[in-house]
Amino acid sequence: MLAMANPARVSPSRRHRRTLRLAAICVASAAALGCLGYRSVDARGVFGPDVRGIQLQMLENRTTEVGLEAMLADAFQEEFVRRGMLRPVYSDEDPRASLVLTGNVVSCTVEPTAFSSVALSLEDRVDVILSVSIQRNDTGKMVVEGRELRFSERFLGSADPQVYESNKEQALRRLAARAASQVHDELFQQF
Image 1 (cartoon, rainbow, N blue to C red):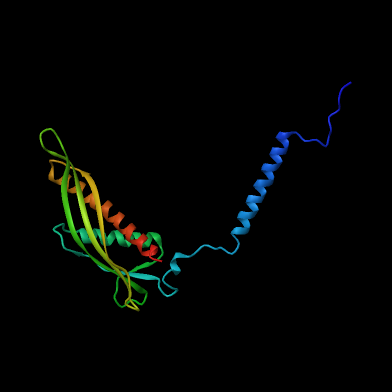
Image 2: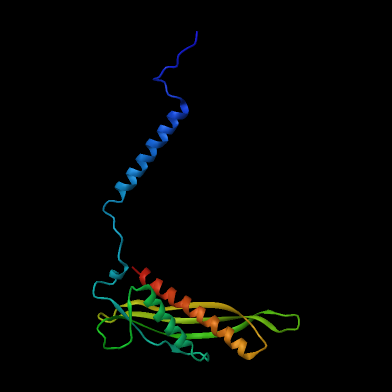
């Protein structure tokens, strides 16, 4: 005689799936309940509702690398415009300029890093040190005080002076973009 299966009895694999499904529902419910009361923070409000702009002063270039301060100024402007948190302002009397970025290019050195078999430089490295400060215009409080930043970028060497200068300029532009990004990030990480 055949034994009839008890309909009340559930197979172990089916019980395991039910347990997993119940655990998943509990985890999802706990996550949803845990998120109640939390909201995203608008980074533009970090400095207060009245701070919407930053005056980007031209960095003082203390190096022999002509035009580096202009590259950095362009990079800072592009970064602040791209991120949209603070609007770049260029006039001292503009009331939107609640923060002021100042500083200088401390040094810029170029060193060969790789040589060919006949002692020609194949690859060079440019090292730049910046000193940057950001101050509140209304209170005079320093937000970022004299932060010294170091950046390096490699570029291909060339026996042709025009190609060499072009490669170095491109390396300096990449370096300036990284510097602007890091300054922007550090400004908002202060809080």
